[in-house]
Amino acid sequence: MKFLLTIVLLSILSLSHAYEPEAAVGRIGFSGCHASYKQSLKALHRDLAEKVFELNHVQEGIRKYSLNWVLNNYIRPDGRRSSTRFQYKTHAATYVKFHDLLVTGLGKMGTKVRGGYSYYCRTERDQRCAGGGGTIAYVLNLGPYTFNRIYLCPEFWKGDRNEQLSTLFHELSHLAADTDHYFGSIFNDEGMIQQTNDAYFYEKMMHNELSWVLERNSWAFLWMKPRENPPIPLSIPERGHWCRHPDHMGMTETL
Image (cartoon, rainbow, N blue to C red; front, side, top):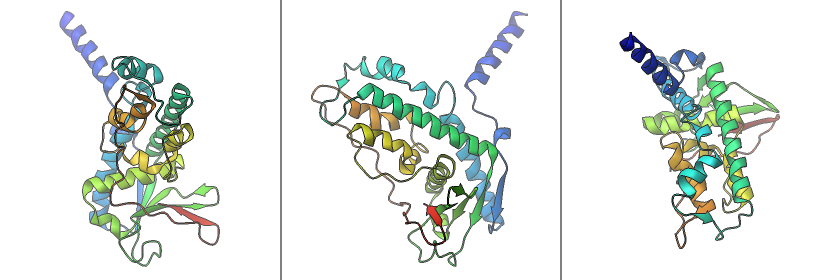
């Protein structure tokens, strides 16, 4: 009897730390993708979904890193103080807003993965993909409406698997959370918060530990040790996602 009780308790504990099952992933559609591309996209999408669910996990995902957690596990143990080197005015309040917006953005990405969307494989005849060496993928909007699909240019298939996953994560943030691109300073309250609307910032989470991304792009700037040099933020991958301005007919694309 005691043995059975132990098994049950271990099962409950393992489930509490498990991410959402594959069954939670919504249906994905394809257009213009030949068989080998479909197979590759199915595998990529599984890994993408797993990462999104991991980031949304109640105990181990973004919700874990509240201001209280940062105070008890990062600021106080290291004797850190509010930074005076940059232009922050409300360190704690800035982080609370930064964190809340990340919870919302990643939550929307999780909802989109569970709801499903489509991948459209394009050719060089698509003027947004023409020329090569530029656009890798994009999301298309018509006014306030976003088409429920991610468009993949031929350039997408030239990257390695990690680059492809980063691109899909980047585009999913556009599709689900309506992110943009932000290239301004993060050394003030507004700039720090603006990162939560930057697809390049979300992209960093695909292949890096979440706590490391948060430290390198938030905590270490808001709270520093005495006489400590600030860290270098995670750089954007060389294979960038080119921005375009709105075109005619009210159509805009976010890359």
